[in-house]
Image (tube, rainbow, N blue to C red; front, side, top):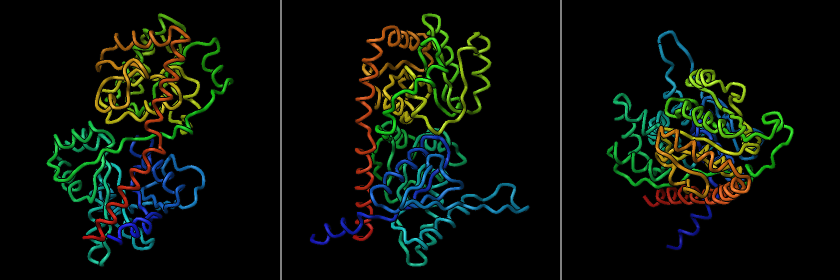
Length: 391
């Protein structure tokens, strides 16, 4: 028993490998912000992915980036990324004496980590793997019969498994035969980062007459139902002067643009593309719209709340875990544009009422502040490392 406290102290400053997608999606954002926060607390963090993560901007001591190179050969119709990723993991772990791997999104990261782990075991190196499930890796891609057996196997071979919401945990057990516990560690937000005063000049450009500003941010996939966003805005604009900002890009952008033309709201809608500095954009807006068919968590909504913005969302997936009906905004059924439009008008019609929702949203975001969530991951890492030594 006397050895346990010593182990915790020894492993407090850890050498961690983080494997993620480097894009604007929720899994990549969370993984990058997690790594940055861990590095700021003194841990050594090594990102392993095919390009530098979009949120990995600026120099941070203790952070290292390792690019996965995938050589192309005429023999391969599809470059073997998973094999290259596993080989890179092996190289980084050996040359930097990493203590654990934390992989985000099951496909292909968990399966590549299993391959790397087995290669290293042959050399007498034991590296624990933690897999964090984020959403579509389970609810969409993972259910495809092409991938399902590998997904289930890789998850079960992980030394620890986490999910970003209780809903996602339940969905994973529902659709896969998982033999291990899945710990729920919610997504988080850096409240301090999003607590910004609006830039007046920027706000004037978007809403020169003081119009209400509504905003939607996503990857514009079908599951986001961006047409519903346009329809809600159309209804709101009939009741009051308003502007709509679309942040992001993706396959359904053209559909949304076409609907804007049909409803003749183009002059009041701006598509601003992918943006890294979301905190400056969210600071000028009054209401966030998230009309998704499914959200495993709803990180975009949480970031909006942290910026002091109420949210109108669907009640799908994990959104009820972060939304408080009638306090930080409102939830409606998927596709119920009429009800969500009424909710939006109810929040926006009165300045005092709007400010009350804004204050409540900002206060609620503190529940998911990064300072509260990071220690949960640190404890998980320590528990896994101690368990590795015990066994």
